[in-house]
Image 1: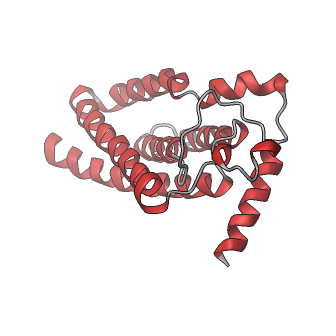
Image 2: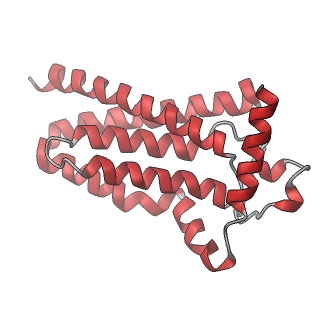
Length: 189
């Protein structure tokens, strides 16, 4: 059953990856770059400051640093120690049939750190600001899905890497949102 799932995952990857064209490659390379969305993160921090104040912002920054560190380390644990699934760009059986747009391709890819980090940030930020901006979470979730898809487009992650990364990220974002609520009550009351 696992072999069949991996086969379907590979077929879906090849199909989705080959939908790309050189016309759009530059855009997707920008989207997949971790620094591209620094202004979005700055805007979210500004909104938190504006709605919650400086003391709460500082607590939130500590929680966000812990959250991103957590998602990164767990992702690396799965990639490099527990699963060790080769990235599609490293898979000799499909290398000739895919479009590698990325400038770099690491060895292992299960699960996607970009997907887990962006989804954790989306869920965390969306929940934290939901009472002030009720539609923000939907915008952030859409942004996270676009970031996740960019990893398929540039040729470095299978769809299953993306789905598992997004699932882990959503759970992490929710868990750290709950932690932030405890910390805010404890240190600002």
